[in-house]
Length: 333
Image (cartoon, rainbow, N blue to C red; front, side):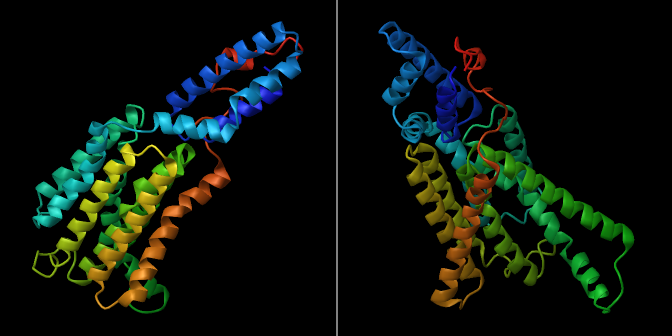
């Protein structure tokens, strides 16, 4: 294959943002098209170089082709949309019924979410999976808040205030923090290599739950005896998560990429602002707007990371197209 064709196919693939198997199938089909088109044009008397250029021109701009292919393959079924919204609705139900503090039901729901996440990851990472992954991070987030007191005590000790925490507890705390960050960052980078939108979709719940956990800790603590005080924010949390569940279903069903981005950014920002406004009453319009901007920036960070690390879950020349791409042309190009 000539360099021009290989570069064109790579350009198409870099803008597809689909799963690995679908991307490989699409590029393989394009390879077949180019092979047949170049052969046809060469039979008409064109040189290989001119035939290749005419074939590329007949296919259209690489980004336009990638956009059309994305819209053709990215739309999920209604069952996938339902599965994608399910973790949002499950956790929203726990908040609506004030059952998140239940020592049996709460852990059972999170264990189920983690199991579904692992199953989906091993089964090829379908689009519905990413909302489940986000909730699988919550036990790590909760564990971090559980050891927040140890970190505060250690920081006070460094400032010469109070005694140092026990060495075993301190080491366990740092190990937990490092492990949690490693899992979240490594998973996020893997997902960003496929599509930054899916990474933002996966991480959208973390700022919301972090805000809620901060207020619950100030109200007495997540692991202390339940009281009416810690349940006062259940209604806004349930509403925000239910809204994310509806958005998640729409995200799966939408074809156009710009609509997916718009839905995720607008609803994600609104959800954090709505929860934050109820958690920290009296923020006013400026506080509401600031929370929205914070969430908007947070959800756009994966786009910045993708611009640095590039797209593609696998690397290497022509892995995506099969033997014909790797086979040199007659002219040695």
